Length: 298
Image (cartoon, rainbow, N blue to C red; front, side):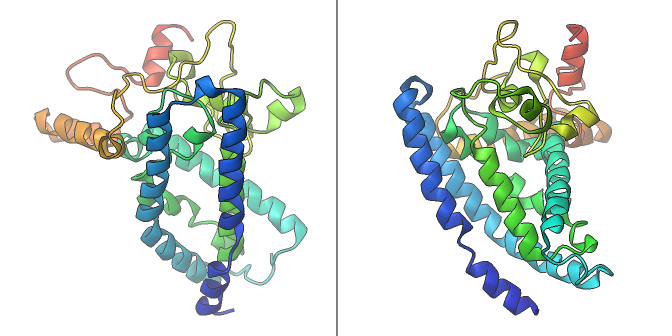
């Protein structure tokens, strides 16, 4: 199949047309059961972040699709994997592994965090918050998937799996679902696990980066269980931005990085403000998540 034929098939993909109505209907249902979880201006900002991220992602997504195609063409496994049932299972594992590291580094590299932080800026946990996507992260996102087409997975399979993952992740942004049966909680990302991820409590900072499978967090030491009776999740940022201005929501951390870089004299400090974890500082208290947890013996 040629690149033109792949692009033609991509343009005929109906997954998004199916997902958006389901998303909005689900939000309406949740609103009927938990009106107190929603705030009009907050939800409005979430909708705008969805629009902003879609616009910013347009060109990187096209470039990524083309790159995936040529990497797939180079693969010695091209035509072997195909679209058999077991190939989809393997692709789910590969895609989810890529998503885990993309998501984790969005929290552990401040420049990436600046692109992801809009998603965490709401103090509410609801299905509307799921649509409050990071804007700047759309630029570097696809680099984390570049190795997968070399394994023989074609770009249409990859984009389909990435879409399935995002649809799954939409439904973990809720407080209406308590903990699920233990086997599910053991393997899959669930609303309980994702409430931890959105919490600003020190115990929960930078934990549970899972997409579909929570196993990566368990393997790589970033898992934290939700302990509502001990430490109920408090949503938002460690220092909330207190604004519904969509431009500030999308860009405030880039501004903060620029200001920190300007006030640092040494080049090593300037680079640390860009590439070290959020909370690092050259002239004040170290407020990185791991440092804060260590101080509290968590």
